[in-house]
Amino acid sequence: MAQAREGVEKNVKSMFQSGLAQELHLSEEQAAQLHYLLMEKMSLLSEQILVPMMIGELNEAEMAASGKATRQAYDENTAKIRALLGDEGFRAYEQFEKTESERENLRRFVPKFEQAGQALSPGQQSQLLAAMTEERLSFKFQHDLGDMSQLDFEHWYDNFTDEKLIVFGREMEQLNDRMTQRAQALVTPDQVALLKSLLAEQLQQAKFVARTTTAMFGKKQ
Image (cartoon, rainbow, N blue to C red):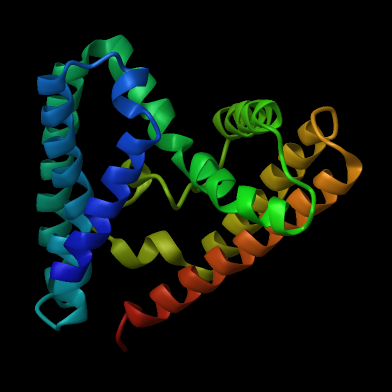
């Protein structure tokens, strides 16, 4: 549970370091309140479902009740965030949260571009991030496994069937292709090739994590 909490703290800290409070024009008090609510939100799955499953405190028969309670807590948390930010601010927050993976990817990629002798200028980084986030926001997933709001907490195993994992992987490949195509007008051909390689590598790592996590928490026969 402590390790799960550390992971949540890292994720929330990353969002604020990416400029979440500035993007939403929050006061220090509002930023502190949002930080607390995001910690609460991101802890729900680990504390009420994943960790209890891992240590044997939650079996399949108890999943529906636990999932229903988790969904209620999630909806209550979402309502609090909306009340804090207002409707317009909440929409901006949702977009920021949805594209945090693109900011994180770019942070990871920048040193690799430098190591390859293909360093991205600040202007290129800014333009590339804008293009990647625009593509993410406009892409429509059938099953976005990274979006908590789309998960069925009461039927947990149904979220990660082989079919859904395959479709999600295929759609991520399509999204990566769209990002690479957008990059062609922003960076050099060599930088585009490296971006394509890094995105593919990142996707393979994500698929591995999804598969191993699914196996770890898979339905017991």
